Length: 300
Length: 260
Image (cartoon, rainbow over all chains, first blue to last red; front, side):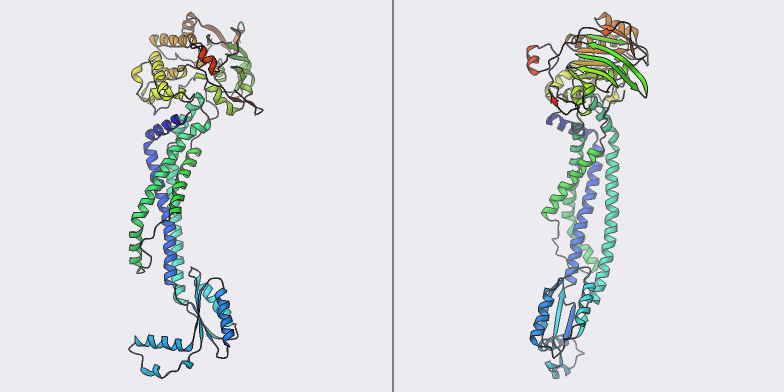
């Protein structure tokens, strides 16, 4: 069969199985929405974590007898540690200045702070870790190690709030994955059952074409093309829907949670879109191949 | 054109054909007559390349299809216009498209395929059916459309199984005319029927009758003209306008060697 004939067959097959192909395109749309929303959801979660998780996670208060070069060494070591975002040495004068700044906004604070001298405060090293779901665990581990050092007087793992946030995010992610998995399986099942619905008609066509001397590859091509086209249509529609609806959906979700932190323009990148536009037709092609049975023999 | 030599075929474990030897030359019409269950459909399925024989040789255009790989059979089948016992049409397609498909697999241009399909439909059945969906036709009408599909082109070898089953007088005459038309175009025509009246009509039109009983050819050896090698090359086709259309036959032998 020439290319012209194969395209003609694909067009005619699409016309005769219009309902099946529309349903398949709809399934691809749902699959695309699920996959795209998963990618965007993960990105939004990471955005929330990095925004909320910014700040200091571990403070190591240093003993007075610690020499400046030892402090510099410790600071350098901490900077080199994997998972550490920022390390900052806070001198006693800065610590006092911060306390006075904080006291100004509190009417309850008295003037007693004015009498304090910087020497009252120890030097400290503030460590900010790279934000992630396991941040509290890493903060606790770093605190334990710092406590074991000779020049460190006390360690404050300021990860309680982050731990609570992390727990909620983990719970949300697990729930999200469960929903994604269920939606993905449902969409895939619907897609396969849709493709199966046209299987008998394609089997009959294949039987006719076998008698006429068509090769198995050419027999499957029209169905492959038709289902790949359905996949492409579904993927395109999913991209458009995500482009239009996701920012509004995300803003609404963040508003409801009171954590309006994600930049409004979040959307799929060009490569992610290209992968989606290639994967859906490929899946359609594969389903067309699998579910177009070609008999080797003619039943007589 | 086609030469079956000592062909045996088992159907569900029982012998359907036993040592059948039969030849049909180009421009010859052979009618295989026999009662139900005599092995006619098996014989025609083997002749059309729809089934491999269990033993023996089936020579079509100098190629023994019994020695070919299964993947090469499509290249043989597209040279054969085969009407199986079940007409096997695509129900959601129009009559014209069903007929055109036979030319599609041979790579004919779409426009000429459409014209040829119309012409053959008009000869075999009713041209008013061309835009009807195959599923809207009666069984007899579907059989006529399937016959038109077997004859369109026409291919070098036409194999038709019970083409007149359930048909009335006018239709039977039309079928005989169509088969004679194919024969006169140089096709080797092999037709099976259990109907003695229809077989006689074909014999009267110049056909050669062969009786098949219990999977064996009855009476004299069923060898007509000695099958001369047929050259299906394009050059030969241009020189002889009345010959069947040239279709390069590329086959792959069991050894993997290819030939055209």
